[in-house]
Amino acid sequence: MAYSEKVMDHFSNPRNVGEIENPDGLGEAGNAKCGDIMKIYLKVRDNVIEDVKFKTFGCASAIASSSIATEMIKGKTVDEAWALTNTAVAEALDGLPPVKMHCSVLAEEAIHKAINDYRVKHGMNAAPVREFDHDHAV
Amino acid sequence: MRTVKNVYLDYAATTPVDPEVFEAMSPYFTETFGNPSSIYSFSSRSRAAIEKARGQAAAALNALPEEIFFTGSGTEADNWALKGAVKKLRSRGGHIITAKIEHHAILHTCEYLEKNEGVKVTYLPVDGEGRIRMEDLEAAMTDETILVSVMFANNEIGTIQPVKAIGELCRERGVLFHTDAVQAAALLDIDVRELSIDMMSISAHKMYGPKGVGALYLRKGVKLENFVHGGGQERGRRAGTENIAGIAGMGFAMEQMKARLPREKPRLCALRDRLIDGILKAVPRAKLNGAAKDERLPNNTNFSFIGIEGETLLLDLDAKGIYASSGSACTSGSLDPSHVLMAIGLTHEQAHGSLRMSMGRHTTDEHVDYVLETLPDIVAKRREMSPIWEA
Image 1 (cartoon, rainbow over the protein chains, first blue to last red):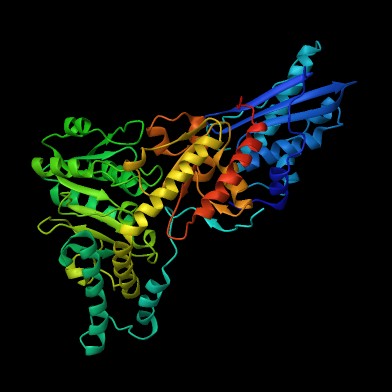
Image 2 (image 1 turned 90 degrees about the vertical axis):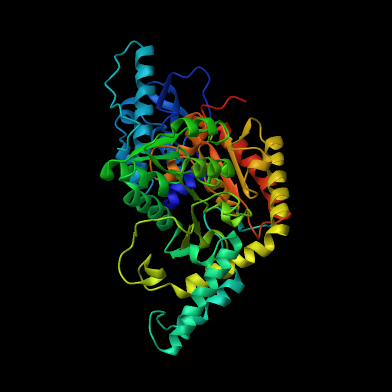
């Protein structure tokens, strides 16, 4: 399995690892069966993602995808964060092996679920989330 | 900190070629290159090399030289044994019994036979340590059963099967018994006569011999359809110009292995047990997969660390110069974790978080110390970032 230097960097030194107490938004994607579970915690102020943390069970590409995705949405507005796609996550990592693309999908899904959680908690409507079949490769 | 780098703990995957084996192989590339099938005297030296190796391999297994057939790999030997037996005995019956924890060389061959030969296959379940139950085997046997194929010892969890009991039952019932001994032959004393084995697959690269050569032990009198067709090599049973250097290397490697075993086996067992005890003590909620000490290959350890995924462990260990393997989905190239770990009843989390460290000739106490210093911290660090770990 050949990973890019970027993947190995974020895997070896993941950014924003941890939890946020009483998060404004919490999203979880994946399941133990497929071997990847990602949890994203958001702290939102004035519609801006002030802080973001993650906890991930999964392979190197799942951990790297979580790490870089949290970096990409930190300081962004909620709508900007919503616009982050799995392709953008994979590109930011200088690519993922085809069999590992579902790890970037997991990041997109967890962020969307966290944002929806925030929206519902604050009286807004949740938007539809692209749900993926985690038991099969994307 | 001590700087121990390049701690190779994947001997179950492959072993380095012993320098003396390499030496024994070297004349057969550039000097003694004659085709063993040729008539002139020069080629008789190639023939002699092959027959010498056949004798060495036979002696190591208490077989007769004429019962050893060299192949291109252990996988080929497995394919030949199963497909050849079915082709020969199809008119007598169409039922095979094997186990859920077999190597893919057996399982995928069985699936092929189900699909293309209309053979029925029973995949025996195993207990929590990976052993088949004799009563299950007995109950599965029917008048249609022509072949039982159960591996000698498992490649992932090291569990040794009750081979002698299986062999005796098969002999009594008049059913052929094949065993894949690719892992076991490198680490255990095997006497094919005493164990009532009819067919056995072995591979050179697991025992400090070269890759690309294996063998099938075929008990005298057992009839098998040919698998590779062509010239008259291997007494007309396996066609293709012989891999003289590879075969010479395999024979020498088996002789060496046999001679070393009385010292090497207890040495490996001691290293294995120290590693197992050390990990179970140092890592919270670490689980040993596979059988207890006496029924486990001398070099095999396999753990589950709940909360972490195997590939993560392998890469963190790699960064510290430790080379191991895992049964997680991410390392198998599919999204399913190891069928062996699932068959012994592990949860998906446990199977994804598995780590195999298999030892060998160059493993030392210092290596074990280094793993015991390194691994607990890696596990703790990765568990900290895991959403499914609760200390």
